[in-house]
Every structure is written in structure tokens, then in C-alpha cells.
Image (cartoon, rainbow, N blue to C red):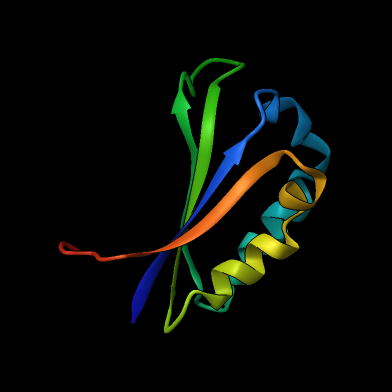
Length: 98
């Protein structure tokens, strides 16, 4: 089975603006995980031990025969719909060490 990376580019005030949307976003992520589609997910940047980390974006790892599960997730995600994700893209990930 192939792996797919869903990358999110985010607004500079992402941490603050995601608060009212976080429960729905995490619900979608948990549901995708329960279906066996989502493996890992999280934000990347610096200072995650600080109250206001510098979030540069997020990445979500999906498993599947094609990229459709990752695309469906992004299309339904309130972070995308609200505009705090400014760009998203799905790429195939050629894993060489698992």
C-alpha cells in the first residue's frame, strides 16, 4: 500500500485562529485513523514548548492505493474551509525505511 503526504501551508496567526475549529478537525482526523487511512499528523515549525509556537505548516501521512483519502480529508477540513490553511497539496511518499 502506498503512502501519501498531505502538506498544509498556514496563516501566520494559525495557532489562535484554529481554536474554534480544532474539535471538528480532530474528529475528522480520528475518523480517518479509525478507517485505517491516516497514520500520523501534526504541525511543524519551532518552539512547540512555548505558549505561542512558530507553526510553519502541517503534514499528515495517509495510506491507500491512491491519494483520494488525503484529498477528501483536506476538502472536508474546517481549517481549509475557513482559510487558515492557505494552500494544501498531496504528494506520494516513497518510503525506503519503515
